[in-house]
Image 1 (cartoon, one colour):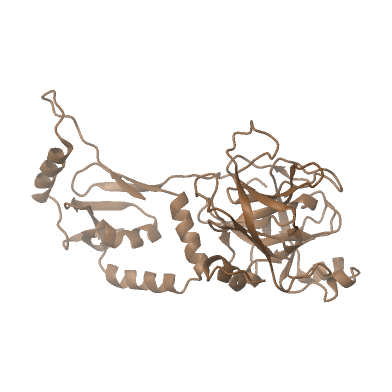
Image 2 (spheres, helix red, strand yellow):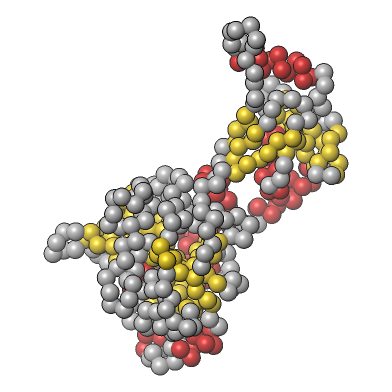
Length: 392
């Protein structure tokens, strides 16, 4: 939502003028001095034209620069827009039309999570600042060998809870990524009849003094990929439909889906509530670790003797990441969690590039195996934003 804040002064006569009177008075004053709609202006050192803000808004948001107000009409601010704004708007619309549904949703979710405020005084030709409210952490410091995440740093991170049939307690044993109001992404091997809940927005699964305000959502359906089988390690990806929709806010919001099967970043961030050491108990606190991308050749060599679970070797839909000196890795409880990259232009935006699948031993120089999100984009989109029917 965009708000225009005017700076109004109280009258010197001791009383407050009604807002409508002040607003109308200013409009009358401005009309004699300000540039009306259709008049020329200067837009970022180039020719511009004054038009209503609602018309120019898509361009201004895409350029993410400063805005100059020409005047005001009865409905909105009249702003300086590029002279060829109609052509630019058509180009922008065509580019957005070619986006996948998940890319469009990414933009939509970020708008919901990053409100924009325009600050200005109500005077003609006033230059104003379009400021995006930062609802995220800018920390890029780079779970075995990992470090504790900050509150709200990974607002898409989720944990899947399983009902222990003996104790009745809910135990969180898999990670997940929120990707829409109704779905989280996880690993297919995390599917279990005892899976009952997805927790979102938590920092420490056992603490109520961590400053977090987590929400638990009942699981309506666990949808594994139709080609996944427990006998092999392939197609290890699944979607979980939540029984009720998530209310997006600063601490709980979806991640974007990586759009390509090829992952160009050499360093990625893994997050999870997993074990701190081999066969250890889960950490409870959300951890993060930076991992390096391994070549497919190096990964093939590392898993050359794994036999039946990888009868076809490492395939194109799988991705390898780790830390060659050892000491950094994802562990048992991190399964299903995200391997992600932060947007280079917008630190509030994360793209989940892969889903944690499996590995040999935590914290060794052997890389872990992840399922590439881009390889399953069509399948994900059809279920999450298509007809909503399960694939199995």
